[in-house]
Figure 1: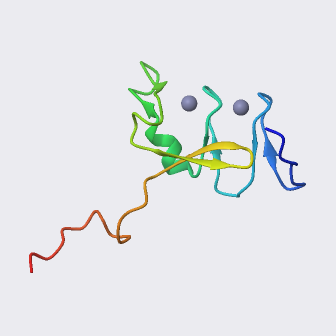
Figure 2 (figure 1 turned 90 degrees about the vertical axis):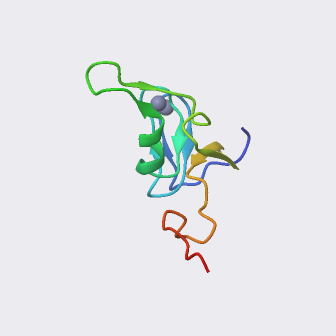
Length: 89
Ligand SMILES: [Zn+2]
Ligand SMILES: [Zn+2]
């Protein structure tokens, strides 16, 4: 990664950095996600028992290449309302 780091970039002790107020960076596996919601999806299992990180691809997330590396995000819904049942007509 040779891109210049903007002054407003956030960073982690692992060396990763990113921009964007809604970003989430996992403190366990040091993966960067577009939002907390996306980050939640790669954390599976039960809290305090077997909570763990899984491969973001396995969790259904989509990688996007950014100047600072790979950002994982939710796949874009086709029409923004993909979770609603479409009318049959
Ligand atoms: Zn993680
Ligand atoms: Zn990190």
